[in-house]
Length: 279
Image (cartoon, rainbow, N blue to C red; front, side, top):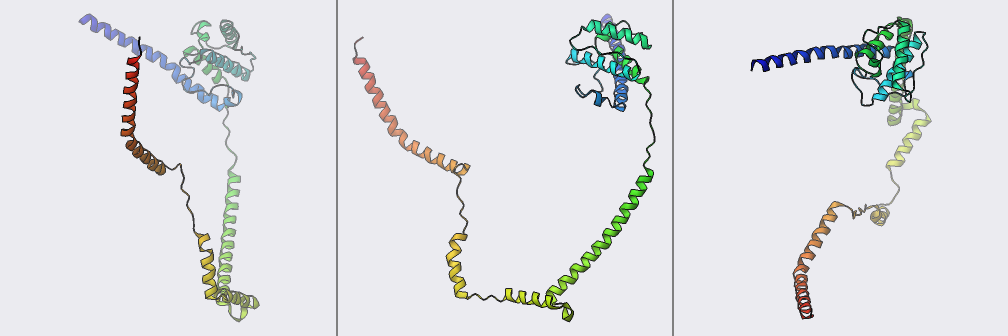
């Protein structure tokens, strides 16, 4: 029992050490992704998969694509540093590609304490993240202050002036609308002129109809049937289908006994006929 407990403790300690060692790649991958976003890497790698915070820290579903992505990023970053190195294609030998990258990294002074080129052949893990992070750290990123304070003040002043002009215009429009409404309904007094008189006569003509009541009633009786809305039933409506189904069910239930008796008689006659046939 004691030996088993000690063995379990040692296994747990080894698992904790392994987890701590593997977490370095995930921490570096966060820094790598943020630095790549500052360099607008999406513009140069539009045909590639969008990177995540764990892409190079762990194996990808497509190892060949992951390895090619790693090689392309290294080539692009070394190009930004002024060191020309062409990334191999996906059809090239991964061993030769990893050896070529390892040799180029030695020339630019990259840290290679993790081991030989075989570590880079995996296309993921801590060695690959170390290389990517080191290349990104060599690229200076400048943050310049934004120069838009004066433009913002000018735009605020222009907006305030436009709002003031808009408020005055709206007040004028409201006042004009009220005056027109008053002139239209009240005639506007003696100062309204002939236009107000014409509007009053137009209103009087509308209110005083010249149609005889009897003629109006006859016309209404003539056009009333045409004004009724006819709602046509849809044969595909579920209610009609349900009614039709119940109707068919009732018919089948009514015909079932007679049909069953007829079939039984036919079955008996056929059985006797078969019995009379000699073997």
